[in-house]
Length: 164
Image (cartoon, rainbow, N blue to C red):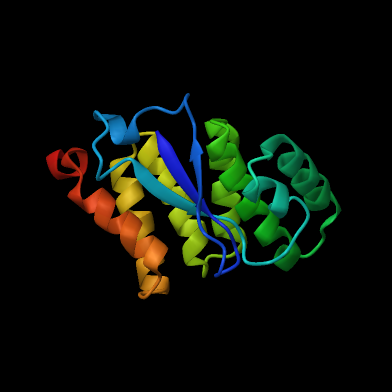
């Protein structure tokens, strides 16, 4: 399965990562229209984000978790949680990803990216209803967000969602 991780900078292109151990997207055979959901790191430059964007997940996770342990305000924690969510999805640590994705949404419930990233996790783990709800919430928070709109279109077109 391929996931895309979009970097925080607008000019930077999305990084394609292959995660061999993830289950096929939403429990169905991969089709070209459903195999490239996109994740996004935080827009804020925080410890570990560059490593995560470069695919050096172990270093990114280590730096982000260390910074998270030192952060006191939720405004400082939110981007770290977002990045840890992305990194753990990319490394197939789905239980940890779920914890970080939920914490990211809780820390900043106005971020469409947090809902998008959690939706991707929900899609991967077969939680179709939660996936759609999170993507629709993300879209309502930022209607013109291309990444969210693209993911929502991919999920909406999938055979698996249509059968539910």
